[in-house]
Length: 191
Image (cartoon, rainbow, N blue to C red; front, side):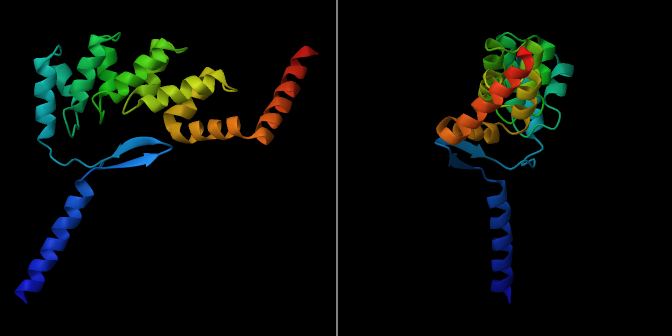
C-alpha cells in the first residue's frame, strides 16, 4: 500500500511541477516562451521591490511597480523604460504586471518611433505588450485600419492580425477584393 501512495504523491508533484515550468513554442517561424500565469513564488514580489528600489524608484513607486509580481521583470522593465524616453509615471504604468523585462519597453519604444504618440504607445504596450504588438499596430495602420482600430486590434491579438496580413499579401484573390473595396470607398469620396 505504501508504494502506491508514494507513487500517487510523486505523480501529483510532477504534475504541479510541469504546470509551473515554462516551455517554448515556434509559431510562424518565431520562438515564443510560454509560462504559467500563476505565481510560483510569492517572495518574488519582494525581490522585485528590492530591484526597483535599488534603481531610480522610491519605495512607494517600487511597491506599485511590483504589486502582484511573480518575478523581477516589472522592476527591470520599469528601469529600462525610465532609461529610455519615458517618465517615472509612464514607466510604472507600462511595466506593472509585466512578465518580461524587455517586452513592454521594446514594444512601446518601437511604436513611439513609428506613427504612434507616447500615450498611444503606452496604451498599446502596457501590461505585458511585446514587440509583436508594436509591429502589428504599425503594419495595421499602414494598411486599411485607423490608428484607433490598429491599437485596439493589436493590443488584443497581434498574432491573429499579422497572420491575416500575411494571407492578404500572398493571396491574389484577396488582393483583388481589397483593391475593389478600396476603389468603391474612394469612389464615395470623389462624388
